[in-house]
Image (cartoon, rainbow, N blue to C red; front, side, top):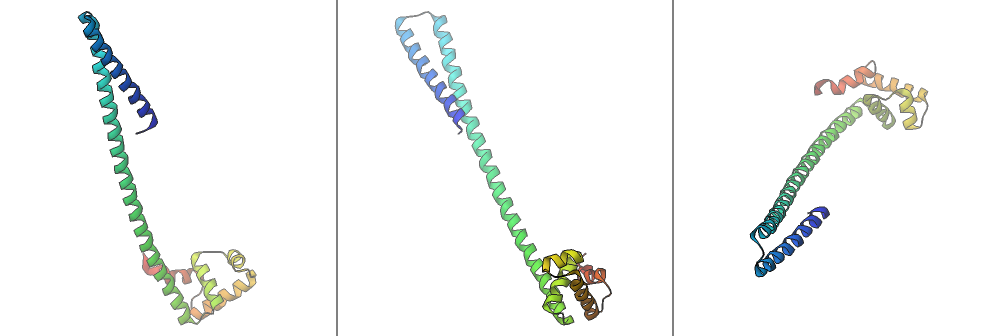
Length: 164
């Protein structure tokens, strides 16, 4: 229950108590029915508003709990799918690395080949590896020669062709 509801309900409870006490004293004093009726209406409506506010607060808490449970379930499902995707990604990377070994690529060539498959430009690969573009071009040529492929498109297609 939030602070505003607590304050409102507390105020209404006090109003109800004071009105009830006032009605009790008015009955003992023998005041007229019209006055007692007005105060009784205040007492009834205050009580109804208190019950309504408590009911609405409980409904909101129930909704919040339900949404929290749904969010937690969605998070668990998302984590499960992330783990599944990571497993497949790791399997694909392992298969790619295995093929690089079959082709006899050096570790440097394998790194460059993986970056080529990812779609990085020669300049980006050189920057990522801390080498010159000329070195990356030379390693790319060695990759294509060892793999019997002609270019980056064929290299990428070699690994992605059967995925779709």
